[in-house]
Image 1: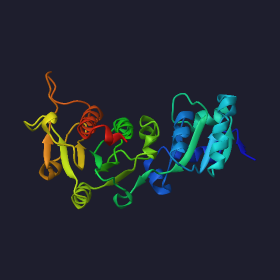
Image 2: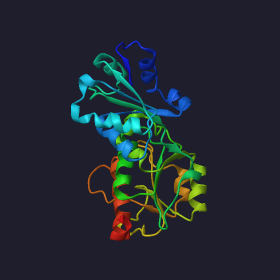
Image 3: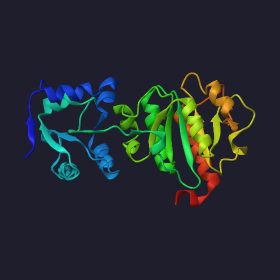
Image 4: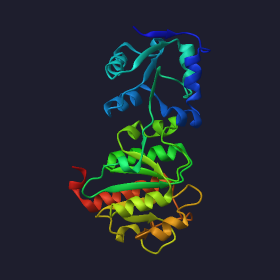
Length: 269
């Protein structure tokens, strides 16, 4: 039998609101997944929700199978009034589904790599939407892992999860300092390819066919000196306009798909 909460002042609703804060997420090692599609995709990736909250007044009958799936995965089921759901929701307009799950972040040592790994390293990314968009691209391209080097936005940020369409649960993600990430890449014999306008080599002539880590920098500062010094390859995108850089998520997508192109169809098998 499920629990029902009607009051937006209920302590469990207050906890959901608190999970929007990074310090609460870090302390509990938990985060929020909101939306029917996102919760469905998280379950598809093997996530076992701790709790599933849903508002029957905001959902349709054919969506109820999601509640059954979550319960089968071990979740506690809590129904909410529409008023309580709107209080708990971090979206402007809730579709009536919200889950509490374990944080997707892991350590570098927990990441398993393929025989010809392709890794995306995101240095000091501030905007959750950019970080989430890069994970979504990485999942589509078959990237082995996405690593936040000296991360600012955290992997459990609800807006990272939303922008990634919950692919943050199906692509291994980790956070570590820049020196730790560089050492891990060296230990795994992965060449470091930095995306920077401060080079004459265009992306098209860079070799990304072997084990490679594409490194993109912060939105305003770009790649740090530490990564430029560690780079095996520095490459830039050809720019015909007046600006000398693209949005970081766009740049990452172009670099990643160039690596996919060079590796051929077998890279997506």
